[in-house]
Length: 143
Image (cartoon, rainbow, N blue to C red; front, side, top):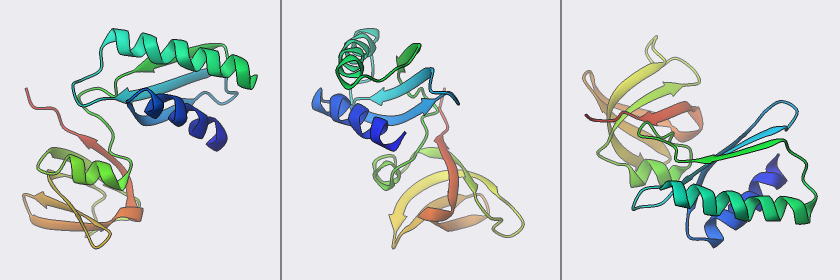
């Protein structure tokens, strides 16, 4: 899956988009590709990426049944360290791999990264979690 993700990232970034994540079904029959771009992802963007990836899969002889390309949504996952910088001052939900003070789930305002730790301003004060100890993090949409 790592090589496939690298191939997909080359195509996506080559077209000026950001690859958020790639998900595959257990037998690789379904591929979900989540893309982003600063102006927001449109249906046309998804179609463009889908066509380019389909061509690349044919050339690379990658077998799959279905390809889905979409935006990561308003509750976008934060995966790379750059995501934690880019979305500083956003509301997030964060789950840690190990408990911090008998708790694994936190919500608050993301303050960014400092010395390899994700900083979140929670209602109980500042939380610092080593980047590698973050299991999941997502933006919390504001309506």
